[in-house]
Image (cartoon, rainbow over all chains, first blue to last red; front, side, top):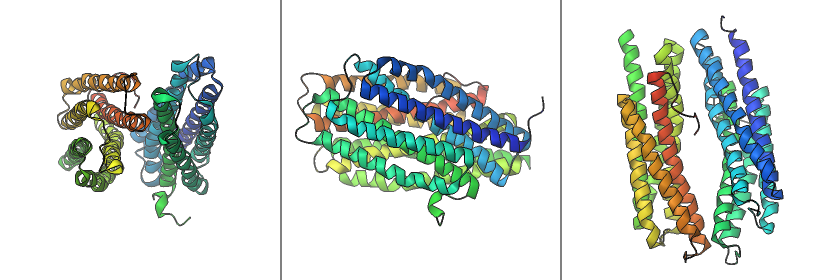
Length: 219
Length: 218
């Protein structure tokens, strides 16, 4: 079977990346619900669902490889293919981080992983991270460069939440012991990294479309 | 013409191997800064990270030029695509060494690590540096036996990482929550550093054999 034309492959890459981001965001959304509501079965579903994201990534690499092999794209098209390869790695990692959140829920079940007073902060981190992931999905699908530049500011909100969480942990009066502190430290890190990867996906899109890093854009 | 092309491929591999040497050195210094509470050394690691990022950018440009001008196929195409992945992994290793150095700087002049956990971090540092150097060697030589070694070295890192947690969770832990939080993150940085080195080696196995050893993750 001959390879599809390049524009069709590029469209498929955008579509696949969009689907990957949506799937990773869905996974983190469910993992966060599992974490906050102590739902072990929901956590197990997140763990089982990670395979789908890995398969999408393999598909991205396959399509990208075919595009390079059969069409030898140059300039903007080449950037699109390479940035799809790189972004797929980031989105797969987003899926892994959602999986890590779910694994903590399972490890601590039937007890809750989080003390009650930090749950609102994690609900907020989950909300911000999922929103970043969904925005990255839209950027990947639509290649909207202006929307892409919003993710940096959204990520600042995550960094603030993360710093606040660390301050709570380092405070004199943390009453929940070391084990819970270790869990909270790692969980907060997973959310922060998820957001970082979503930002990278958006930056990759800006790079693919404009040939420039977002910092260089006058937006 | 063909020779120039081959030279460019070798140059690309050389740039990545050079990055590996640099991130190994960064982790060696960062670990020493951590263990010896050496602020100047920590600052060195932090300021030198820019150089690693620059080499990554240059390597990616080389990869782009190869794709655009030479339109490689088969193994050569796999080499270039793997180089793009590898450059990302190795740059991240540099970032993780940087995070270790930043932790050392943040707590200076106090040590980040209580005395009894310092030996574990010395060991994690040694294993991490070894992994980075081996990854560089695998890029240069495409030695599959060497690539396989990275998997077992990484198991050693995972064991150290797990052990670190059991020390933290032990009821005899007397240093409180603050140091435990630092140690949790630091141990994770070393573990992730090792994971990325393994990912680099796996990509080389893929270049040589056309098959990915084990899952694609990391």
